[in-house]
Amino acid sequence: MGTPTEGPGRDLDTAASSGVPGVPGDTLRRGRPKRASLVARRLEREIIEEGWPIGRVIGTEPELLDRFEVGRGVLREAVRLLEDHQVARMRRGRGGGLVVLEPDVRTVAEAASIYLESLGVSADDVFEARLVLDLFAVALAADRIDEAHAARLRELLEEERRADEHQIVGGSHRQVHAAIAEAGGNPAIAVFAQALSLLADDQDRRYGRLTGPASRQAAAGAHRAHEAIVEAIISGDALLASRRMRKHLTALHQELIHRQDGPRAEPVEATAASGQTGRTLARRIRADVMALGWPVGQNLGSETALLERYGASRSALREAVRILEHHAAVEMRRGPGGGLVVRAPDGEAVTRAAVLHLHYRTITTAALFEARDALEAATLRLATERLDDEGRALLAEALERTRDLRSPQFGPATHDFHVAIARLSGNQTLQLFVAILAEITAERVPGAPPSDRQTASARSARQQVDHAHRRIAEAVFEGDSSLALRRMRLHLRALECSIA
Image (cartoon, rainbow, N blue to C red; front, side, top):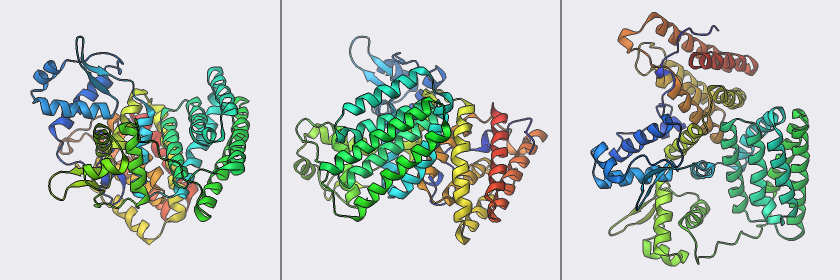
């Protein structure tokens, strides 16, 4: 397929616009934004355009009130949204104002973990996604690692050697995997790999930690695996590093499945109530919701009942509730019959958190499409292998929505096509990551003329996109994953060239 001489238009992929039931684009569809959300978005955009100047004060509260012509309540809600995304916070006192923050990748990882937990993703789903992300990460790291990252990995291994078994299976395990992903130099892969590692650790905690000799044996095995993987990466042997990572992940997964099917291991002790923070308490509430099977609509109890159950302070509980409400995981209802009600997270929080973090990391177009290629290749293979009659109908419907090249919905529909393929993979975790990358792509595609004034080049670009999608779908329908993959890669390459 030829490379278009002009970009397919801003409408090629639009954020949160899916019409495919059950895919992230559908759950992310936004209604009319609240004024606070609009103010927060404008401030986010300004911070991104300014190059994310950490520590800079971008306005005092009076200045921002005057500038946006909103009430104090609206502005403070907007600031809370910025704080939740770790974009900025309001500093009080002399020299105060809205200060730009340095985002923490753990915010994205936590948002992804909450969203995927609410979907009830299985250990198999997470394992399948980790194979895609971690194997790609070690291959990148083996090719690109510098001496600073090599030294950091060996430092982590030494810390792990001195740690006890619970630290190895938990925190230090995540640190090694995160450092490997960072060494690969692709921020999207690094962020997603860390999110998956946290989710896997949450699943591990749910079934209780091993104790005694079994715990020490598992920790020793994990440490040996990490040493072998790191040395293969440092030596530049991508094939060996990938083989060792696959073996390591498989062993972790098999051990988790064994505990799921066997006698219950000793549960992880709850954090002591004394001095617990709102974030710690939020994790405890999440764990309880997960244990209940994420029962949407169920009332977990009044504020008074929750204070007694968790032994928490009122301020810690309210902070925990605010954190969970930000992720749309719960809602505190007031009045008679009120209480903390379980909700189904809509995915907007995780998508926005990931998009903002990758903007902060200044992800390049090349890195964006490198990640898209890896993830969409995986979902395309799985979609072709798992295609059934329902999937055929879904893909045909996605194609039908791009039939009218002059429709203002053409752009959203082309976004839907990529997310629909990811949905057919049957892996909700990979599906979410594909949707996030498609949203970032949508922000970078050049603007298109209105449909009633399309230039010949714009119409040609739309025709090429539609043709590429239909050719990809044709190969999927025929069960030819190799041909489908070739066509998808040509299509992604053309899109990358149009916005480079």
